[in-house]
Length: 116
Length: 115
Image 1 (cartoon, each protein chain N blue to C red):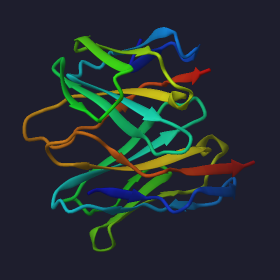
Image 2 (cartoon, rainbow over the protein chains, first blue to last red):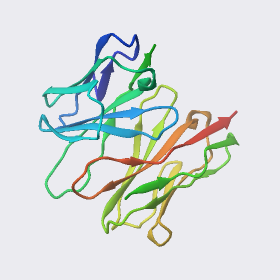
Image 3 (cartoon, each protein chain N blue to C red):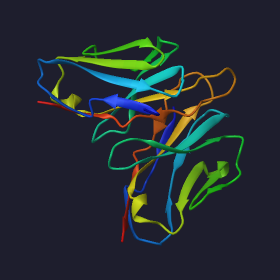
Image 4 (tube, each protein chain N blue to C red):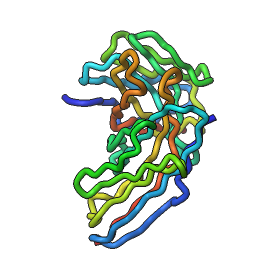
């Protein structure tokens, strides 16, 4: 496997279900991100983890719960979602360095989520 | 606040035509980074280019070229001799030099290249 992988690629869940999205990066990076892409809004950042510590949380509802057990893996735990949470969830990673400015983020293929 | 505007929602061209995708950005930062990503139907965002605000040199990579003009806050992307495989949604994005790591994305331009 190379780059950034995400599983599952498609997910359908009911509002009372609990599910998890998984992201794995094979690039040796030290920062990982969750983005949401919905039909009517631009791509928006949800969470940032740097060196396994959450450093940004963009006012995301608590029904989304991220987890970063190590620098290669990132999860997004979902529970009691709403239909408006249906979207493409994209994971990205980057290598953060000191004094090197904003490093390039590399994205996975996304998980297309449908909440019924 | 940062903002990226891609005024062209959708563009349709015939194969071998040249096409330019516009990107206009707003930022109060003196140093920043600009990016272009391609999103094919599969959904993955594919990185194309990263440019910092100090470097206004135009860049060419094969059939792709980028024109960065600070004076007009624009970072336009031209595909020369377009091909069907270029059909995708293209996003321009802006990031601060330091601090908050989020990319601010434009709304994207859907490019359809007809055979």
